[in-house]
Image (tube, rainbow, N blue to C red; front, side, top):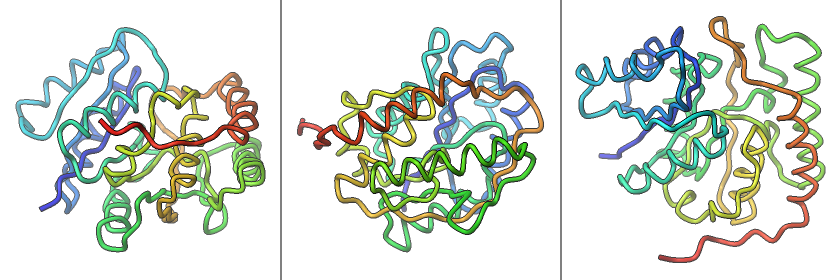
Amino acid sequence: MTRQVVIIPTYNEKENIEKIIRAIKEQEVDFHIVVIDDGSPDGTAAIVKSLQSEFPDSLFIIERAGKQGLGTAYITGFKWAIENKYDYIFEMDADFSHPPKDLVRLYKACHEDGADLAIGSRYCNGISVVNWPIGRVIMSYYASTYVRTVLGMRVYDTTAGFKCYRRKVLETIDFSNIRMKGYGFQIEMKYNTYKLGFKIVEVPIIFVDRTEGTSKMSSGIFGEAFWGVIRLRFRKIKAAPKA
């Protein structure tokens, strides 16, 4: 029997958090959930805690003081998942842009088909994005093209944040060498996985932009990713030191 956990970073997601937790728990695979909340003033953490009595052995929360960045939230979740010996570790947004039913497809890509990292991809089968302004679609698509060109990494959706890792991948990546904190973090983690020789597959999904809550995207996030990719191209990627 495998153990799998979905990491969900949150900041002001009260409109979505209960619904996304229930949607994940309805899937045919038994997914545990750990929410990493960065001090949401809207009461997101309180909603999660109110659900823990219903899911006492499979819903967890880690509360952090203030907004510390997407990348550090995921690394906090990765370390917790490794310590708790989960076999498959997922990244997912709280806002339903990542369809909960596709968690099962990512799981099967790793568990049954042998992938080390399965990516829920918006661009591996054309462009599969709903409710985004055309300008944002174009920016995102060509950002991935830019990353693929600079890094030589054969991944179509380089900024995707819907993923499933085998634990051994996260045990091998040196988190102390991960520099980017925003959406560039997603690029950096994929590049580390690629350079360390793991098998990456893309699973086509339909990405639907959030209908409730507020987007966390900013121009600073794109700037970090643009320059960070150039620096990443010339950095030597090494495995984490063995404990």
